[in-house]
Image (cartoon, rainbow over all chains, first blue to last red; front, side):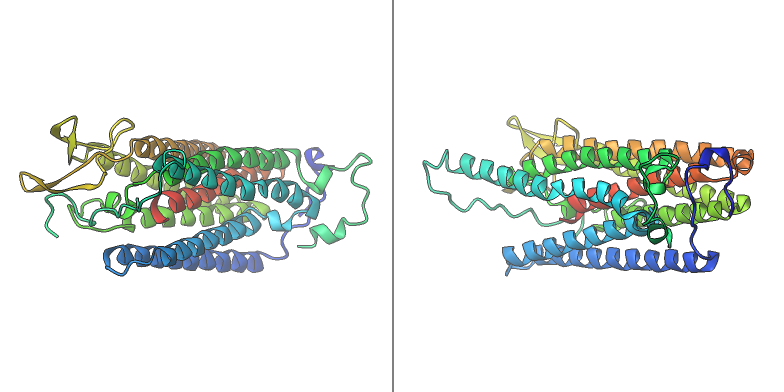
Length: 148
Length: 248
């Protein structure tokens, strides 16, 4: 593909090898994304049914939510790396995008910690009272008046 | 792709070559998307902060369990899964459009861009239904000492804990839920929906430009690629909005 247009005299193009190989890669990535989504949904349903059963383990649910978050990050990796072709760009360009986004690690941890701390402070009135069990379970999943 | 290796020994910063061997518009689109990622990230993280700070938060599987034309059936996660798949598929058709552009295949670009636009409009229609259902739904709540039937808005939230034993005309009565729920849900999904809408508009413009042979004359379909980056970003944001509001 010769792009000898004056617009692009300063950029050298090296396109994907052949039509078929790239399409195969696209389909493979699509399948991966779909499978990951289905796994996430299955885990989501798992959490839903766990809420309904009596032996509800708070920590197990948190662990499953953590797994779901990691699966979503994996989806992000595939969408950005393959669909948006960032994986095919020059390494330094990839770094200028990825490195600032690492700030999110601090961002998420710090603010969720803050939110939790605020809840504890409110419940204990500034640590002046003991924290009693405040966890309220969501109501049974039914529509008011609907036939269950 | 041989891009990275082949350019290792080139002096990129002595002029005459585009930095990172990438077109200016594409690089700037990447940096705009990074800034937008921080904006969405800030909204979602502030949502997480408020949610973590509350003793009670509505269970998404209880709030979002409706499906169009399914009446009062209890179908948690079903409709939002459909929306997620619609957006993923439209992302795939967008990749195929960009791929067709690389091979100067005008007919291919037209076909795949058209499908991407259809996917985008389908997603917006689904989101409109979801909003309408949430706002106009009537739920029995004990507020201000009176039993009222309200929907979810930015000022009212009927999704609170049950009031044990209190019934009204055969329906369970609830306390109001945290009012931030509506503001965050409508605000963040609305901001995302606005991005989908602008993405659809951009894609329609790209389609029209393709049909009119603008890219054939230029000799490259780079504009389609840039529009593609924006569209994939929109899909990516949805992955995380779906995660934060519906899944975890």
